Length: 252
Image 1: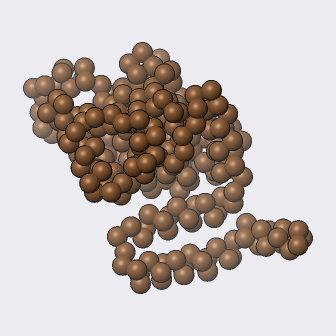
Image 2: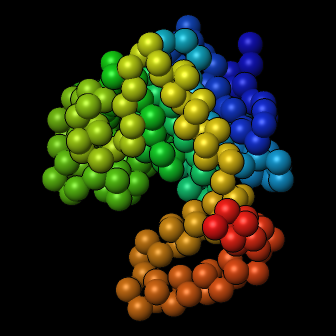
Image 3: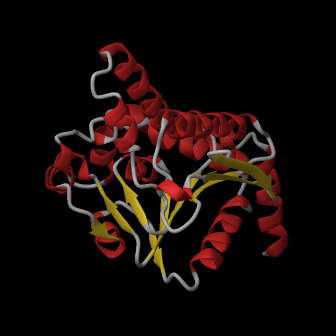
């Protein structure tokens, strides 16, 4: 069975984590399939938005612990290669030219919570759960830590990684981990409306906005303002901007 489904419809690239019998737990095959789908969508000029979901009741329960158990006496070199594959997923998502939306129902734990955190926006059902339970087995949510610290306050991030406790969607919204919470009954409809609205926006403006947003992460204010001035000028040369201005004046 294919562990990652991928298709494009009306400008929306849909990536589905597809191991419902294992709560979409991550193994190297699924991670590689996810990276392949991210690369394909990044190079497809028809893609405006990427939507990542999980098959079945859960988004993703984290790394497959059966793999960890089988590899308990493996070599450090292989462990490093496998860890870099997970880190590569998060980097691919951050460097992707289009907005990535994670739609979370059920559990998003460990590496699954990491994938949600790496998305540009997160939508969740009111019954969803988020957390990093790695510490309970003597492990560390090390790869996602840099992203988590950019998403929530330092104190909240430290609490999440050291307590190992799962939190509700409402708490995740309060923490700043996610963007919207919807009822389970309307979730699918709300998600479709959200991504369709995003896909209707100017693709050039979306692409430049995302690139600039993350490029200024480590910049001082003056450098960030200068980078913004460059993108401002470049945006004015695009066909999308010219059409947008024409449309504005036709309305007024």
